[in-house]
Length: 413
Image (tube, helix red, strand yellow):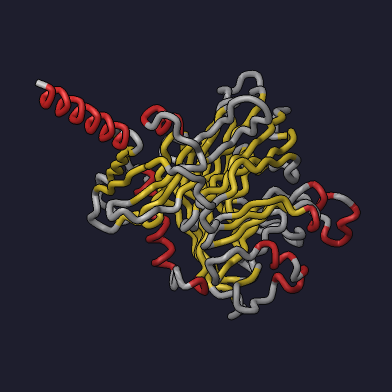
C-alpha cells in the first residue's frame, strides 16, 4: 500500500513538472496557403496573446526558436511609453524566409530565465535636426528621408524648400549608413564611394510615395512635417509617425494628415498608413480623393511607367543618363481594403524649381479614415534588381503577398 502511495505521489510530481515545463513553451504555426516564396516574411503576434498562454512571461526574456531549435531574432514592440504603472507592449515580431512551395513553418516561443541581449538591428529611424530637421530611415535594403520644418526657414538659405515628397537613398550595403552619410555633407551625399549615393531628386514633387489631395485636375499638398514620434526602432521593425498641419485641399476644405511608417528588415517596400482629418464640403459625398505619387525624372533619365488596375499598383523604371546613377525602380501598391479610385498624372510646369511630373494612384477616404499603401524602390547597383523585369516581378509578388497574408495559429498546454 505504501509503495503504491509513493508511486502515485511520484507520478503526480513528474506530471506536474512536465506540465510546468510545457507551460513555459508556446507553439506557433504560420501557414502560407498559396505556397508562394515570401523572403523576410514578418510574423506579428499580439503580445497579449503570448502572455495569456505563457503566464508571467517578461518582455525581455522571450526566446523564439525555429523548427530546428535555432534561435530566431525577435522583437517586442512598445508603442506607448508608460512612465509609471504597468508597461504596455504591442507585438512579438520575427521573420521567416518561406521558400517556394513551403506552406507551413513552426516555431516555439519560450521563457528565458535571464534577459536576452538585443539582436543586431537591420532598421533605423531618427529625426536629423543637424540637417534642417530631416527625418531619415532605412533598413538593410534602402534608405529614405523626408523634409522637416527647418528646411522652410530663411536660415536654410539656398536650400530652403517646402515639400512633403519622400527621398530615396540608394544603398549597395546591408549595414546602416544614415549617420555617417550625413557627415559627408551635401556634395558627398551625391558621390558614390562604394556604399551607394543620393541621386534621387525629389524637389517639390511626390518622390517615392508622397501624398496629396486630388481634385480631378490639381494636386493639393501639405507643407513639411511638423511633429514626429518614434514608436519602435529595431532590430526587425521600425515604426514612426509624422504629423502635418492643416492645408487647403480645395473648395474651402482644410485637411490634416498623420503618417505612420512601418519599416521592416529585408524589404524594399515600406508600409505607410495615412490618416486624414477634415470637414467635408457641403453637398459633397463626404470623402476626399487621396493621391499617392511617384516622381518621373524625364530630364535626367529614360522613364517607363506602369499601372495595374487589378492590384491597384503603379511602377516606374528609370535608366539614368549618368552611368554612376544607374537604374532605379519605384512602386506604390494600395492595400487590398483601400477604396481604389483610379490613376492620374501631374504635369511639370516649365521652369518650376524642383518640380517633376508625378504618376498617381488614387483612393477615397472619409474623415478620420486611414489609407494603407506600400511604397519604395530598388536600385540595380544594389545587386537585387538588374533590370525592369526584376523590379516589376518584385512589385507584382508583393501585391500577391498582400492579397494572401499568412495565418498564425498559437497552441499551448
